[in-house]
Image (tube, rainbow, N blue to C red; front, side, top):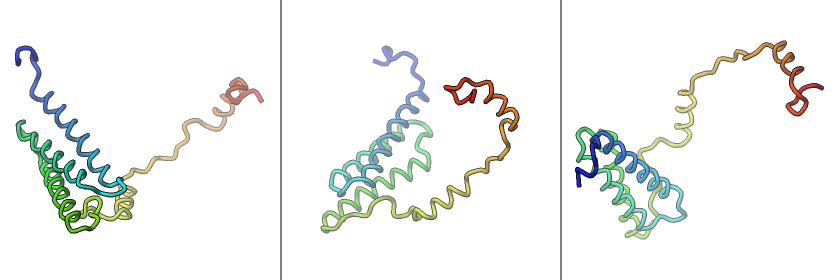
Length: 141
C-alpha cells in the first residue's frame, strides 16, 4: 500500500490533516453558535472534533499548545452541552472564556494599521485622464 502512494512527505500529510481538522473545528463551532437550539448532536460533533484533533499526536510536533487548547475546548463543550441538556436547560453558546463582543471590536480596531492618505494621482492627472476616456467609461463630456 505504501509503495502505491509513492514518496508522500510526512509534512504534506500533516498539512492536509491539519486543514481537515481546522475545517471540522470551524464548522462545529459555527454550528453551535448559530443553530436555533443546541441538541445532543452538537455535543457529539464537539466530541468527534476533539477526537480528530487527537490524531495530530501521530505527527511529530503537530500537537501545538494551540491545538491542545482547541482539544480541551471541544471536550469541555461536549460535556457542558450534555450536562445542560440532562438538567433540562439550554446550554451557553460559544466559549465562556472569550471576552465580550464589544472588547473584541476595540481590540481589532486598535490592531488595524492606519493607511496614509496620499492621493494616487494629482487632480490635473485625473482631469487629463477623464478627458481622454470614452463617454461609456465616464469621459468626453
